[in-house]
Length: 135
Image (cartoon, rainbow, N blue to C red):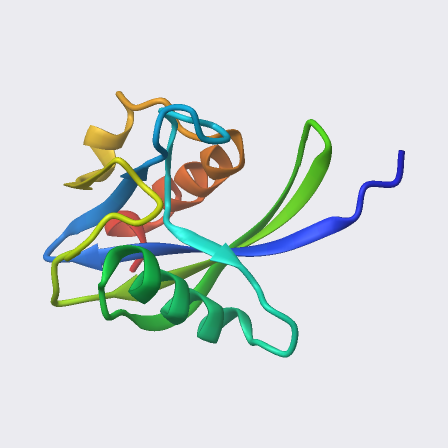
């Protein structure tokens, strides 16, 4: 019953009016679903530091965390996550795919055609409420 809540981060990474979407590899948990990249917060780590570390480790991408966007709690089978979502910027391009099979730079409208991980769906809804996606 009382699942422990796992805190994870996600970055809504912007560059030149586009957002970075990442696809989880087939055979992985939520394989084939799209998400905003991030990862599990380590003990003693701030959410912002976690996000910078995870994006560097998984994508080889340097980001700047700008602001908190939203917080989503979602129960998956066997675990509940609290997703701490931040608006981020980058001038770079991912140089590796350690935890994803594909990444794409997309507009908000282009994101509608993708199958998103359930915890990320409220993040898209939050982005749509903001002028230009998150100004």
